[in-house]
Structures are given as C-alpha cells and as structure tokens.
Amino acid sequence: MIRLHNVSKVYPNGVVALAGVDLRIERGEFVFLVGPSGAGKTTFMNMIIRHVLPTSGQVIVNGKNVVRLKPWEVPYLRRTIGTIFQDFKLLPNKTVYDNVAFALQVIDAPGREIRKKVPAVLDLVGLADRANELPHQLSGGEQQRVSIARAIVNSPTVLLADEPTGNLDFDTSWGIMELLLKINGRGTTIIMATHNKMIVDRMKKRVIEIDKGKIVRDESEGVYGREV
Ligand SMILES: Nc1ncnc2c1ncn2[C@@H]1O[C@H](COP(=O)(O)OP(=O)(O)OP(=O)(O)O)[C@@H](O)[C@H]1O
Ligand SMILES: [Mg+2]
Image (cartoon, rainbow, N blue to C red; front, side, top):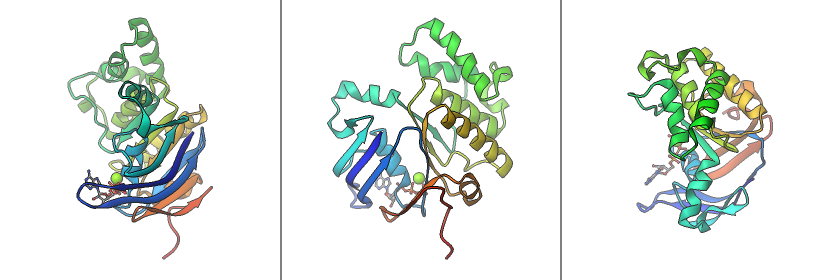
C-alpha cells in the first residue's frame, strides 16, 4: 500500500535528506523508523502525506503516485492518513470532544456522524469521561490519547506517528504503545519514528533504520540498534 521507488529528497538548501530509497510497506503493518537525528525519518513521513515532494523517484500511497495527484485529490489522500506528533498539537481552547470533532468538521462530516463517531473513539482511547475538559487539564499521556483519537476518528488506512512518546515517561509511553497496537489490530498501518530503544526492543515489530538518507537495515521483529 506504500511503495517508494528510488526516492531522493534534496532540500533547496542542498541538504540530501533521502537518497535512493526503495521500500514497500503492506496494509496492516506496524513499522518503526529508527536512525540518528537528521537521518531523514520525518522527511520520509512528510513525503507519504505529501507535505514534502520527492526530488526524484516515485511515492505510491494506496495505489496512487502522490507526485502526480491533481490538486483536488490531495485532500482525499490526506483523509486516508492520520498523524500524531511528539507535542500533541491540540487546540488549547477547545475541549477534548471538540478537538476530536474538529477533524470531522473540517471535512464537512454530517452532525449525526460526528455525534456518533467522537464518543466511540474517545471510548476507544479510554477518555470517555474527560470529553468536556480542556487539554491543559490532562496529563501528557492523556493529551496524546486525544491526539490519537483525533487522528483515527476518520478511519485512516495509515497512521504516521513522529516520536509520539518523545515527551512521555516509560509507563505512559507503554500505555500509548498498547493503544497503537490495538489500533493496528483493527487493520490500520502504523509507521512510527522513534528514538526509544526500550519500546522498539519490546514490541518486536518491523524496524527500518535510516542513516544519512539511506535505508541501512530492514528487519521483521527487529531491535532498535545493532550493538556498537
Ligand atoms: N524544510 C527543510 N529544509 C531544509 N533542510 C531540511 C528541512 N527539513 C529537514 N531538513 C534536513 O534534512 C535532514 C533530514 O531531516 P529529518 O527531519 O527528516 O530528520 P529526522 O530523521 O526526522 O531527525 P530527528 O530524529 O532529529 O527528528 C536533516 O539534515 C535536516 O536538517
Ligand atoms: Mg524527525
């Protein structure tokens, strides 16, 4: 469902962020992206959602070359992809409920669909009883659960997670991983960039290591890093 053919990215300042990347990720996979800071992990994810275009090569998502999409097709691509980040990116003045509902309002979902889906997804992430609170009234782990609810409320086929546990302690992080496993178990492909060795080693999922823009390792049931 995601294919990269000989993909390179050179930013306008001359930085080579990805160089000749070939990759297949199938529907329903759980993939960790690891590698040093500046390796190209975020660039890779931004390319899948077409926030960054490749300088050369093909990026195929759900059967379509994202480079060739017509302008009106881009929002439809983005609806099939959910994103979560290290810093949650919640709207501070909106309640938990409204933060999640907003993701459906911006795509003009009907009110009855919103009233059905938002409580269901808040229940899934374990926050049904916090719906009327504001983000600052929640812990970091709870805020990340809200951002996950927002990312999946429209049933994306792919969830991109860029260091989602970067601001969380280990136990809270592990709770987030259990939630991501549950979402993955419902069929959503998950691609997660992380520097968290303990989590990667425990999860025993596919690990793709990027270094200086190149894939240097791709293992099923992999670990964070080779011993140095
Ligand atoms: N918009 C941009 N313009 C120019 N250079 C960029 C841009 N975004 C990223 N880069 C550069 O591209 C390279 C890859 O960056 P990227 O953010 O993809 O790395 P990363 O693997 O996500 O790193 P980290 O683990 O620190 O998040 C780095 O050298 C970075 O400085
Ligand atoms: Mg990054």
